[in-house]
Length: 113
Image 1 (tube, one colour):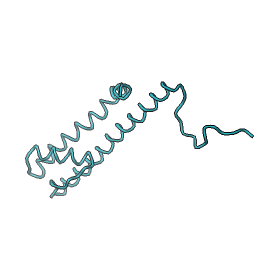
Image 2 (cartoon, rainbow, N blue to C red):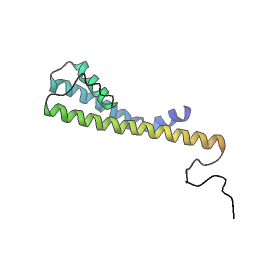
Image 3 (spheres, rainbow, N blue to C red):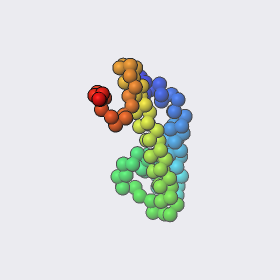
Image 4 (spheres, rainbow, N blue to C red):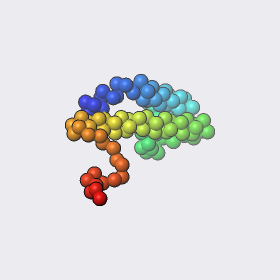
């Protein structure tokens, strides 16, 4: 977790900006769809996290386009966070075991002929 948090400091401006963009697009969505501000931001976050309850749906073409962009931005932000987690596990493993954590497809104890 410590390694993850250290790596997070480097990429926070990137994924933090993406999350901020999702919230701002949620505000725009609320105006386009003529719903409450909270509902627009809620829809944007649920869409970005790819949960998609379906309780709030776009009814205009612009709202649909916004929802697609929100979903794509959410997938990118999620991908960044998953990549950080994988990198943190790799770094932690290598520091604990003193060996590289790469998958080569070959057995670790290969007998020599």
